[in-house]
Image 1 (cartoon, rainbow, N blue to C red):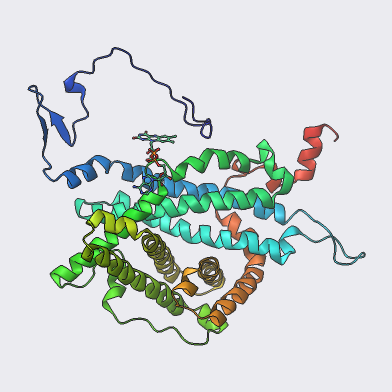
Image 2 (spheres, rainbow, N blue to C red):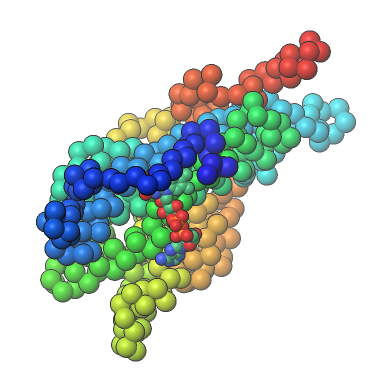
Length: 402
Ligand SMILES: Cc1cc2nc3c(=O)[nH]c(=O)nc-3n(C[C@H](O)[C@H](O)[C@H](O)COP(=O)(O)OP(=O)(O)OC[C@H]3O[C@@H](n4cnc5c(N)ncnc54)[C@H](O)[C@@H]3O)c2cc1C
């Protein structure tokens, strides 16, 4: 059956009827069937065997995560360039019409997405390098990172494409402008190679297992960036000024505070269910709300941490200043868009209001760099669309009125 959302790259219809596949042709990397019909495997533990069966999916997840960042970059390059060429309305009758990207509301729609894609790009590169240099000892970390990033980056890609499509108005729907096609083409990424929701649940379960292992062995946390759990609770200042909000220390502290608290709450809730006689599987299943929040907290902290490491390698100067704007906008927007900071009391209402103001300021400071940022993606012109260039000329040519 053809996949209607995926017609451009995936179209396979194979049917077998009365075909016998010889035993020797079994894909038997993990398990086999002997001539006497006995099922055998070198891996005794069924959970480990299942994990070994699924491990080839990891490469797919890494590729999908990285690929979704590329697609978001194309969408954003088109929408930002359109926003810098399309004029609509003037504030007074004598003024020239304003560029779309001069509207603060248009900045708020596109520039946070630009910040997110830049940080996610760092995370994707980190994942790629880790996969290329993988060793058997890294399997667990690769599984957790690739699950978290595949889910988060592909979800973000769909949000980005939808916003870019709308930011290009009616022309965003034209086939030649590509974004509509991307939406149909890449929607599937949230499902194949592991459904995103299920992957995020796996991340929380893995963190729960890390917590139990550290407790049982009475050893500090090591790996997955969880070392912050070995220290004291970070302290968040009562009053958040602009310079505090933009400091990497505050940003990491807040993300770490959220992650450690949610991990604690999640393990406590699971323990409560266990104490009531429920099975481990049922206890984890019932705690899905905290599991979702925890997986998101882990992923966002990971993405920030990776970007900070990259940012540290850049010498002081104008590039570093832009990276600071991108990083701060990423954090501020994630706070602005997530209820968890208020719900769990990590920030007061006043501080959440300060964050919202900071988003506005950061957008207007980032706007003069928007073209440079999308140009830095290095996307060849042929991969963009007429909307990213002289679309008035292109429209005249395509309607033959030139
Ligand atoms: C285009 C395409 C190509 C594919 N290619 C391959 C391939 O080459 N090889 C291959 O093996 N597979 C392939 N798949 C299958 C793909 O991996 C599955 O579609 C995917 O894992 C989701 O499983 P499902 O379709 O059975 O969804 P379902 O399991 O029916 O999921 C439906 C919904 O239920 C939710 N759900 C499911 N289980 C749980 C749970 N335990 N807890 C909470 N919620 C849950 C999910 O979040 C999802 O939203 C492909 C799929 C597509 C669409």
